[in-house]
Length: 528
Image (cartoon, rainbow, N blue to C red; front, side, top):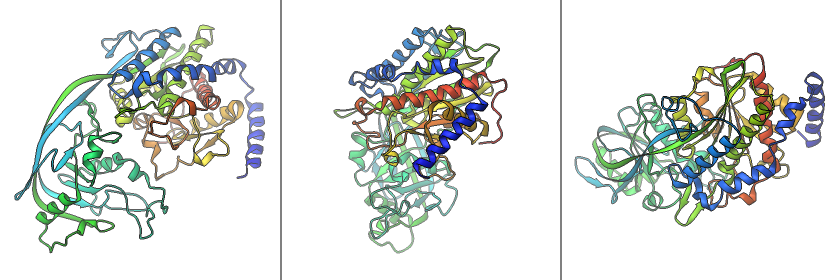
C-alpha cells in the first residue's frame, strides 16, 4: 500500500468516524496532558545511571518502585485499602513479589562410567533449585526448535527424560539460516534461549542440557539472558514455571554422554553434523545439585483509581519497570525497554486522576500497574494474575505498554506507527475501539504484522499482557518493535522520540477512556 493511499484511507475513515462519533473535547483535554515534556522529565530520572538499570530485586528497581508510588500519591490516587489481606505494603501501593536469590550451586552429574562436576565440566544456570534427579533416558533433540519452518522433535513427549539441545539454529551450506533464509538475520530461536527452554519444559523435560562451547564465559559473565541469580518463589497457585534444571555443557561432554548411552558404532564428531541428529538413548543419569537460596522481595506498583457506578469492573494498564541492570561496568538503562512504557503509565494515571478531580472520573475502576520481573520471565504479571488484588473475572481489559519510544528498521522512513498485538484474539470489539479512537484522535499507522498465527518472533507471548490473555481477559499490546539498541547499554534517553511516545500513550488513553465509560463491558467472542 502506498503512503498516499494510506493517507487517503486514514483521512476518509477519520471523517466517517468523526461523523458517527464527534470528537469528545473532554476526553481530548485530558489526553493532551500527556506531554513530551512530562514524559521526558520522568524518564530522565528512572533511565539515569543513578537507577542502575532497574534490574529486578536490586536497589535501582526498588528506587523505581518508590518513585512511581510517590507519583501516584502526588496525583491524589489513594493507597489501596486492606493492605494486609492484599499482601500490599508501603502505603498500599506495593504488591510484594517473593524471589529466591541463588548464591551458588555445587553438584555433579553421574553416569554408570563417569562423574561430571558443576563449575568444571558443566555449569547450571544460577537460580536452579537444590534437587536430586534420577533419569533413565536422554534425548538428543538437535537445536531444540519446533517451528512451522523447522522441527527438531520427532517425539512430542519428553516426560521423565533429560534433553540435550544445541545453541543456535540450523545453517545451510551458504551460511544462511534455514528458518529466516538470511545470512545476517537469525531467528528468535537463536536470539531468545528461553524459547528453547520453554519448548522443552512444555514437553515435560526433567532436565535441559544446552551445548555451548563458550558456556563458562557466557554463564559467568555479563549479559547472559537466562543465567539469572533469581527465581520467582512460586506457591501452589503458580504452576506455570517448573523448576527444571538448566545445565550448560560443551560439545565434548555431549559426545561422551552419547558414546556411553549408545550401542551403535560411535563416530567422532557425530554431534557436529548440521543439523545434529535426533536420538533417544537409555542411560542411567543422576543429577545432584545443592544450591544456596536466600529469599528476597521485589514489588509490583499499583495505583487504583476507583470508578463510579461500574466500579466493580476494572481496566488494568501495565508496563514493566525492570530492565537488565549492571553487567560488568556497563549500565543497561533501558530507556525504551521499558522506561518508555513505565513513564506512559505514570502519565496515564495522572491524566485520569486529573479528570476525576474535575468531575469527569471513569465509570469503571482503573488499575495502573508497573510490573517487576518481566525480563526474568513475566514474573510480575504472573504473580499478579495468580494472586490478583481484584478478581480476574471483574477485569475487563489489559492495555500493556512495552517499548513505545522508538521506531524500527521496518519504519525507518516513517515512524508514525505503533505495533498492536492481541487486540482481537479474545474480543474483536477491542480492536475496533482502538482503530476508531486512533482514526479520530491520534492518526498513527496501526501495524498488525506481528499479530498473526505462528509469527516467528512470538511477541504475543513475550510481554506481560500474555498472563492476562491466558485468563481470557482481552488485551492490547502496544510496541515499537526491536531496534539496534534492544537489550544493549545504548538504549538511552537521547534516542527516545518523545512526541511519538506521547501520541502512542494518548492512543491508550483514548481507548481506555471509552472502555471505562461505555454502558456494557467488552464482548468476549473468542477464547485464547
